[in-house]
Image (cartoon, rainbow, N blue to C red; front, side, top):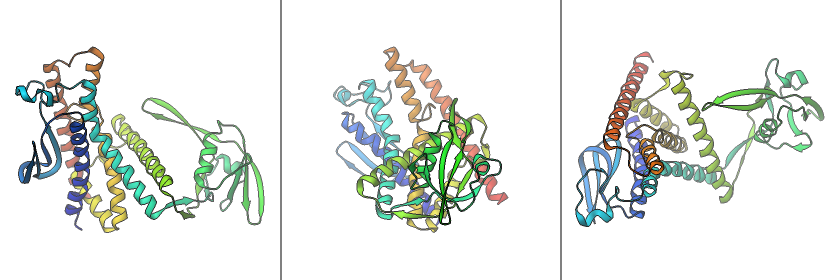
Length: 353
C-alpha cells in the first residue's frame, strides 16, 4: 500500500468518525442536516436521502456537516426554525460540537478493545534490565538480572505493579525483595522524587533508577478486561499527547517535530508496510491526536466553538457577532500559519533525509 493510499484510508476513516459524531448528535438534538461531506471542494459522488446530501469531495483533507441555521445571521425559512442549530439551547449546541472529538476518542477505544481481545496484551515481567548510575536501586545493591518479587510485603507480578507501588511510596523507604538466582534477597530502597511541570501544575513522581529487561508474556483478555484496556490505553495516550502539545506551545519541544500531511502520509505508509495491526494502531493514535487538536480553544476548531458556547452559558447571551467573526479570522490565520509551517517542516525533512 503506497503512502498516499494509506494516508487517504487513515484520514478518511478518522474524518468519517469525527463528522459522524456531529451528524448523529445533531439528528438526536433535532437539528436538520443539509450536507454530510467527506473531503472539501468539488463533489465527486453524492446521493441525497431525505433532507441530507451525502457526498465525497475531491480534496481528502477533512470533511464537514452542514446544519440548518449553523450561521447565526443566516436567513432561515419559517418551517425550518425548529430544525435550526442556532435556535437550540447552548447545551445542545455544545453537545453537537463536542461529539466530533468524542467520536474520535471512541474510535480509539474501539480499536484498542478489538486488538486487546484478538491479540491479548504484552505484560512486562518485573525483571531489571539495567540499573542507572547513582540512583537509589544501585545504592541499595539491586543488580541487572534481578527479578522484583515483592514490595513492602505485597506481591509484584508485573512491571506495572512495581511502577505503581513505587509511585505511591511518597518517598518512604521500600522493602523490595528480589530473586537473584535461587535466592530471594531483601533490599531497602529510598525512592527519588522527580517533579515535572504538566499544564502549569507540578506533578510528583518517584523513581528508583531501573530499566526493564523487556521480557514478558502475552495475556489473553476477556471482553470486560479488553474494554477496560481500550479505555486505559486511550486515556494514557491522550495524556501523552496533551503533554506533547503543551511542550510544543511552551517551547520545551522543538517546533521541528511539527508535521503536516506529508509526514502523516509517510507514517501511514510505514505502518501499512509493517502489517494491518500496526496500521490499525496508528489509526487509533492519530484519532486521539485529531481529537486533542480539535479541542484546542482556537476559533474555527471545535474547541473554539465550545469556548464561545461556554461564555454564552455563563453570560446568558451569545458572544457579539463582530467579536466572533474577528476571533474566527484570527483562528483561521493561526491554522493557516501552522499548516504552512508544517508543510515547510515536511519538505525540509525530505531534502535533509
